[in-house]
Length: 196
Image (cartoon, rainbow, N blue to C red):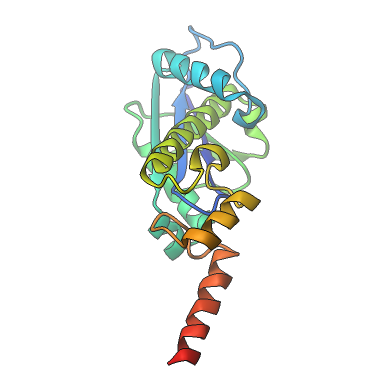
């Protein structure tokens, strides 16, 4: 049976897209050290991502944009990114196993597996590809917006990131539907109405 593992990265941050990856591992070329990407160092993730891309039978990475997150909500945007990742595989899997408890709309049998990224190698591989891809994008964002330490906080709502937003304002890549941004924007709107 050709099994695809699927996972996402970037559901929680205040900025940037949500990424998803789908991976069909090659049973004849096992990759040692696969684990939930959150438990691995950045160097280990990058090393494993290279091995996955070289040895997997098929892999794909996809995303849902900030605009899609703000329009659909983060859950639906995540499922959309997962659906796109599976659709990007050049081999059609017999079954898809997805980390978590919700499934994207797919044309083949699928099951959701809670904590699958720590149990199922193909899901671990997907979690690694999605995380490495998103972290690389955050490094690009830092180059584009040097006032924001995206290379460090990765867009998460850390004290530093919130201080940066307070000082420098919102960027196009910020998710306007996420708190505290949503509340801040609402307050700005109300203050603007009062000034008028």
